[in-house]
Image 1 (cartoon, rainbow, N blue to C red):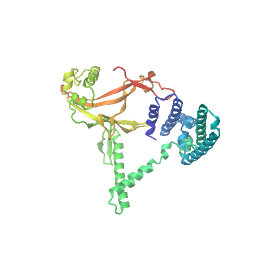
Image 2: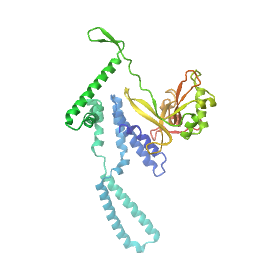
Image 3: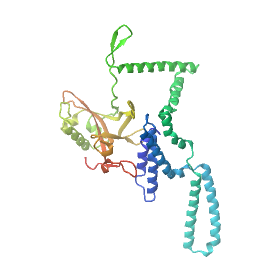
Image 4: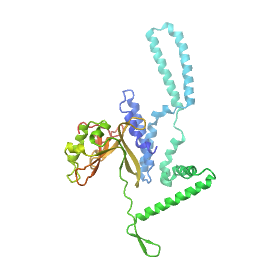
Length: 403
């Protein structure tokens, strides 16, 4: 749920985006139920809380409990379905016997009307039985009500996560057993973990020393050793070099993109950049002769929420017409920073875009021979000033008309 919470709300909203008149109210109720549950789950992962965050968690949970009945029919157990089927069979037989006695005295229109009424009554009784028998009274639904009170008493919930123990079982036991020769494996597992733990402590010590400015005094001898510069923030990396993409023409052919459209976008970008020695040529002929490398993936480090010194690795795929893992083509959606936080309303200067091309072009016509990593994207423009759409709780976007 930790990673699912980042995308499930938008996926549900996208799935329910075009309901017909009979589905509109149910779809709207489903969105009202899913959104607060996702918000509650994401806020529960905070490493520190304030009275405001705890109040928001309780509010989200109350909204979820008020709107969760829309999913009640999906909680039907096997025993409840069996009981509902048995009731439906008995009711169908009883009503069939009654119609058999009265059929001689009714017209065709009356018989059709009676059949419709019987069908509606059977459906209502089945729904009533399922409504009475179904419930959300199970432990994983109940323990959420204690989150806020436990945080007030004991601190952040993440301190009591069982994930650490489960991960330790994998790292310390299973991996160590695989590396052993399966003969007296327990002793080898302990030895393997002891060496691994010692190396990790050593690396952490080196990292801590590297963050200290100036010099380090070694023992009591007075010898001084300069520190190692602290590690910088990880940089995005291009991976998955494509074959036969040495020029823009070959790259556009490989990705099934019209060459003139791609050239137009690149030239527009060049005109907007500052003029210097490393700037790409604005002449289409010269630009088309420059060496190019196409890539299928961009590795993007994203800082963790409330842990800016730790990063999650996100991968933006751009495979063009090539299939990714026996599926369709992989052209991922990404965030693109296009301005300051005052732009695009609640998006704070960011827009949604789909990766079309990832490539690197070298300007061999300049003395510096600078390398320019570029990406061609298809941007979606936000609607209503990028403000949240109240019924769905999301920001709506549409295809860009011009540019």
